[in-house]
Amino acid sequence: DAASAGDIFCHRAAPRHAGVLRFPRGDKSKERSGLRAMRPDYQGGSIVNLMASVATGLGGRSDYALARDLPPDEIRAARNVVLLVLDGLGYHQLTRALGRGALCGNLRASLTSTFPSTTAAAITTFMTGLAPQAHGLTGWHMYFREIGAVLAVLPFRPRHGGPSLAAGGGITPGELLGHAPLGDALDAATFVVSPAAIVESDFNRAVSGRARRIGYRGVDEMFELVRGIVDAGAERKYVYAYYSEIDSAAHEHGIASAAVGAELARVDAALARFLAAIAGSGTLVIATADHGFVDTRPDTVVELDEHPELAATLALPLCGEPRVAYCYVRPGAGARFERYVESRLGH
Image (cartoon, rainbow, N blue to C red):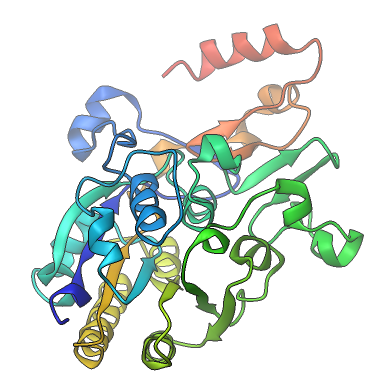
């Protein structure tokens, strides 16, 4: 019914970039910026728990605690379930930018993301139902010892460039990662609606499993396709719909920019039209983000190129995420690495 078609979940976390370290400089900096330390609430208030409720409500299972604000019984009662993931739309940005509208008007709860709070980790959680500790993708750039390479995991390409591993070497993400797609265990027909440019990517094919994949161009076409899925036939359906443009605009212009505000308004208006169009269809719509954003300043960025002595101790480029950087240290250079970090980056 109309009420169940608009249940909205949102959360905040922080951004991802590549090639630098980013962190607040001391407690006073945190106080000035209004930031506070955040950890995932895996006891019922994170996107991991959201997916536990989705899995349980759609006939699957999960070893994680259920979401406090979305009991599985509510999902069981829906004929169709649509999970709308708005990349980069954090709770605080949403409530600051849109005081009313389809998103804020249906806002039920604030959720935490995963750790790290980044697209690579969180999207894999949505698609597998697993926390990063279990699915293993804990950053955009990951070192895979099995093949001796650092990969950009979602494009599934070597960090240094070139074709994807599937195209260039016949290695698929499914073989390397061993993930079981969440959708394959659900008692529903499953669909993945993603931007046309990535819908058939190696990673997307691996984590979507038996789901039917459909590509779109633009927010209006995305909602049109989802409406068509909901309206087609009487079988129960689970639709995962992913929208990336808020995240893209935030990376380019900043989260508080006019460009992000305009994009958010477009999405909100399109969602309102979609909810009105599917009213009475027995569809539960769950909207959330994978992570949120905090804009950084130049004085919070540490460029590795400006620390050649530190770089000389590393066996690989920095991996993971700028806020959660993994340093693979050369054999025998551990003490030198630690001394440099303590003396030059102690803050």
